[in-house]
Image (cartoon, rainbow, N blue to C red):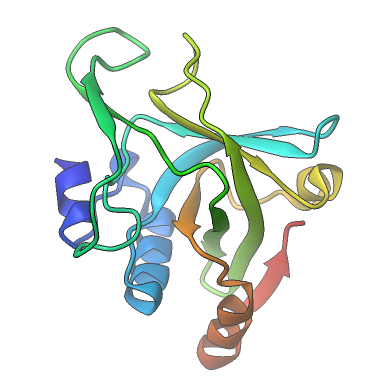
Length: 172
């Protein structure tokens, strides 16, 4: 259901995560694209972050754009129910954001370099190359989830920060 809502330009965010919902709404309205709410795993040795979750839109370029290839599978953690495994585009530049609180926006950028299909974590996974994973880990705050959007919206994040009176922290 969350995938279909996001594909239609609406907002479906799992785990009752209001911060990620607000982030999805803010960026989604700005860029016209749904976000992928993820649980990031930071690897400082390779300057990469794996973003994984079992809920993803398929129309990551926007509701009127073609859907990414996907598989309908069981939920990874308990092998029950249903979950989407969306194959995101390798080489795609992404912006990752999170409204950490009422006055702080966390943001970073990266590039998708892989879509691992491993028997751990969640169904949809991408590995992003980031500028400085160690700095990201040092600056990490605001809870677990991050919201990943296709495109580079770093400059836009700073503009939104000025417009809404938000402190913008670049995590990398």
